[in-house]
Image (cartoon, rainbow, N blue to C red):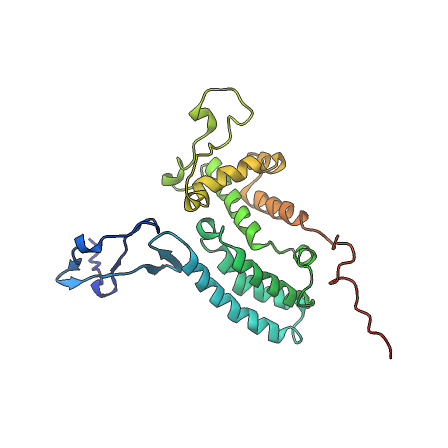
Length: 263
């Protein structure tokens, strides 16, 4: 109707499958459109999200890591020139959006990104290369990348509870009361389904119900009483309050100043 045509030269196809399963490609005939062959790909950049045929996010993490490392290097060179507040502005403008974008589906794979994030916050606070980062995160009011994922999941569940999501997501979760009729304390909690694969365990459909079950009542109670912005601010404050303000390790070699003996 809108006279939109498909650019066949830019069209790719992908076969989604479990990574343990070997595909028999001999039975698959070449796909063509207007007698132009369509190329099969294993990774594809779709609107900034790297999608893999086995639904693993290593390619996306590598892409985000590459972008953040470039910005981190520039910030390190500027740390003696700019104030900490300006370095934090650069972090919020150029690094934080990469952590937030589509974090709901790939955010469980954060170990490599967390190492880079710790390096960045040390640069912002102009601390030593091995300084403890918990006090720095708390002082700068910055969430760790793992807690960014938790915050994103809690905000997604807030929208689900208050019917603010698009219609396909309104039945994304089921409640325990819908599965069984026992009068339990968790009857109104989302039902936690059994999973056999790591991919399923890390998926939002399983991770979010597990997070809600483990979440303290002071957070889950705010879903029905607070606005979305108020709930977001409360979740961030609660997560940052958990961080340690100072080192609790006795005789920590990082915190104890090194004394140089006089000859």
